[in-house]
Image 1 (cartoon, rainbow, N blue to C red):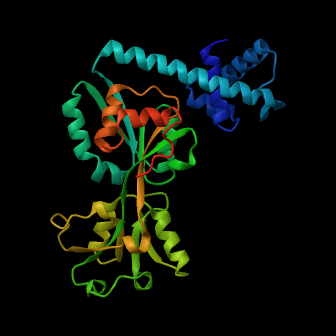
Image 2: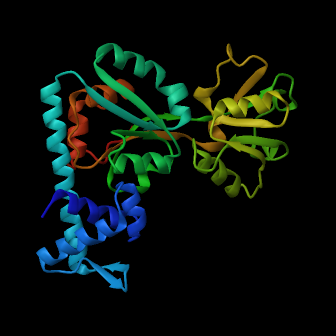
Image 3: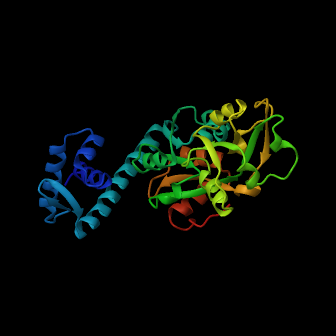
Amino acid sequence: MKLQQLRYLVEVARHGLNVSEAAEALYTSQPGVSKQIKLLEDELGVIVFERSGKRLTSITEPGRTILEIAERILREAENMKRVGEEFADGESGALVIATTHTQARYALPSVVARFVEKHPKVRLSMHQGSPTQIAEWTLKGEADIAIATEALDQYPQLLMLPCYQWTHCVIAPDGHPVLDGRPLSLAELARWPLITYDSAFAGRSRINAAFERAKLTPNVVLAAIDADVIKTYVSLGLGLGIIAHQAYDATRDVGLAALDAGQLFGSNTTRIGLRRGTHVRRFEYDFIELFAPQLSRRAVDMAMTGHGDEYQL
């Protein structure tokens, strides 16, 4: 039995039993993956994948148990490697953060600056994507830490820790009628063209839910993943913007005004995600605590061992 065979097994299951996609993700050939899986099944004396001709059709009952064990073995092998690198390299290493544009642009700059100052030998890189991409990168080990607001709680393999809460605001060009001092309402917003986030980003689900509860249909004329893009098109007069409050700066966003919309859309929680069972390195604990001071090493360890999953802001 080889670790490589276990990787093939897990990757095939992860790609919905599509051997070609698994082989591509592993940078190897489809016949090679199929051969190694068959050799492993012969060694174990059980069938992991049911077949119809050359096509895999389902996972057998013993196969599900074997896959769980394989994932655990691969995770522990990776943990051994991480421990070795941590103690061999001292304060050096690599840290990959997977996050959204909003977090990277508005929440993380000061954290990154302090982290780099504290850990100058750590190579820090950042992958930006949708919450789903962020979760997948972290689950595959392509990222160490996930940071997002949407979707991460849909992945039980990730340990999710709440970091901070935030609300939306409505932005409009100076002089727009919505700024005339009347209380902001969903009915008023529904009268105007709206520009806001794509459905997978930055609390958009709460925006949609608020309009649905009020039985109103918002006229969303443009959706983007980037608050700066939203502000640009609001400045052009194409509509009112709904963005994360932290993305608005009165001194920088000249010509735009903001109205708090927390009472309309509620609060959103940004979370940090870690693969369950992963060895957390010292500089990772530091990054997490810089981003969310309440998440001390003890708090993270308790959550990792199943004693702190219910941690609330």
